[in-house]
Length: 311
Length: 304
Image (cartoon, chains in turn cyan, red):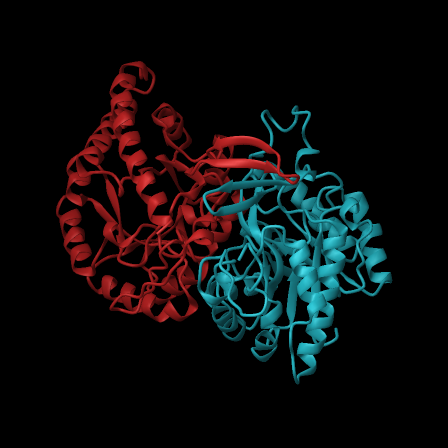
């Protein structure tokens, strides 16, 4: 690791295709939202061996995600997923559901757990319980501020992962909003969530991916990276699910370069090329309010706010 | 409202400790009020449970412990929580407390129930859409008490895993004791602006309107029909969400469920739902009217 770790999430071979992974240190494979996402690495277990091997051969770590909201009927699959990820040599399992964390523990912790965005980590006490059950890393809930994240890292003695760029996960359900009928028989499944759909009302915009609700605006901490470095954060995520290959590639490149400069110390300023890339890909604007104790859709900063109509 | 609920037939009542429950402050109680309500509960042979079921900031953990210490000193032993860390801390501090895992824990499978049991919960609240097979398995395999909401709302997303409200409006409001009420975050402070119930347009990536005026499904339900099955499954607690309704409506709802449950238990084989349905329809109409008015006010407030 070059002093920090930059992760991108990728659901399937379809999303992986064309994505330049060179900016990233690790890839989190699979979609936690829906088992029916086409090619979902967390569902198509036969793909895991090859995907993990390829990432390792390319010098990247491979994490595997698990369903965010597994019903009882999903647990046998989750058990097989844990076994397959461990057998494939994955570096960690991303866990959103505490029952899944318990399953991992009961299997003898064949691989470390990274608590995901839906694990509802709000306090260092909760993080400590998860650490004792096998978690080595936590991603606090979106509502948790940077200051609180620092407390969690210090007091619970776990690594804290931050979303530095991309859509914020705002909600998960097990009923697809994009389908009219049952998912097993609806001809629009699984194609519906491959297309882009927005929900708009008043001045608000959200992105729906069927079983997940994401922020309309892109979380962006680009101009705050020196603070994150000063406060000891080392693990950063670019949310790549349901985005284009160009998005993952170009945003990754921005953060690889900007984090390297921030970690080197000295002067730091948002370069025009970076600003241009994040603006180009943020169709509905930028946000980062949660990190500073405001509404999630707000943007705190002085550099990228200026001419962005969505902010 | 506590007295109304007990007097109309509730065996137990949950109240929110001010700043700490999944409702805004106006529906919560100060400690002296809680102590008084607990005394009344004991005097009529019933249970008062105190909700500390928000997800606070780490820095508020000492405040949580001092508040629960004070209530413990006042004789209160029953609490409902969400954060597994707080749960374990309270259980370690006061081993004779009785802890329930809140609906905010989003317990959707047996392994979830076991996790919270190990964290100190003796009873767990089932996620609102849990099927009866899973309830049966939780009773059989997790061997933990099971609580089912028969009168609540099924959020668009899974309850406890949603931050849509705070995405649009979120503030900090620290009370005299130092507790942040986190207005706008149902998980952290209880006030949800219910933005899912706004009129949404669904638009494609190309900007084409796909559907207009779509409400993201968030429906109030009333599961009287399921009560006989829940009793057969051995469900330990049948719960009504009542705090945001008027005391008169809460009294009417509690009385209805009390009589229905008692009739079912008295003569399970001969029990029929039909005679109850007309009375239920009247309660549903009253509830929906109160909820609609409240939702419109919350959405207006979210724009403020």
